[in-house]
Image (tube, rainbow, N blue to C red; front, side):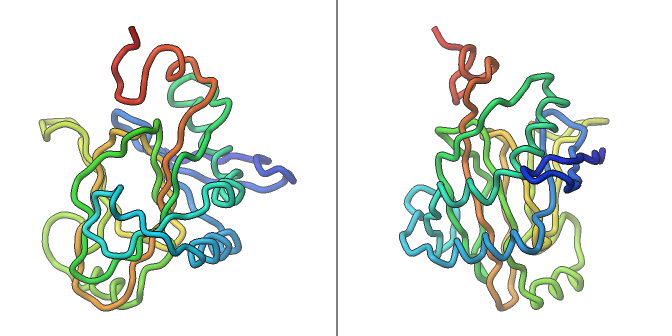
Length: 222
């Protein structure tokens, strides 16, 4: 399902498009505009401190990104997400706080096994760069599934007439937001070049669904 949203940027007048997918959780996808993508890449290039010890990825180069600056750049897209959130859950998303942000520079032979994120309500992935060699590998790849370096999301086990997985071949500018406990993974690839992605976790502020009824692990508060 595609939605067209108008005048959500602070200066007004801009139009944003996003996609939601018909299954259990809200899986949100939009496209980062080229000028914004350049700014995200520049911000990530300043990262030097490793974040690998906190992550599930089998990736050597995972670095912390400044959350304050990341949030500034992401604000228009979080507004668009808020619209999708209201339509999906029937709840107003008053505020989102970025709790962590990092950049993954993935190379041939590396992967991100199926995992979830903790100590947050929402997670996200932004595709910063896909080398031409990887694009060629994806185009030439033959087999079932979504192929080299695919981003995959899973819920439950496969059963008849039930959608339980979505897979995406990475395209530059793709940006996804999803619940913290939605299992996801990235498959490996063989070609030379770096597949760069930025990721961030968020906490929902002033939302009755999360702040008064649930804690991040999904259990009811006493």
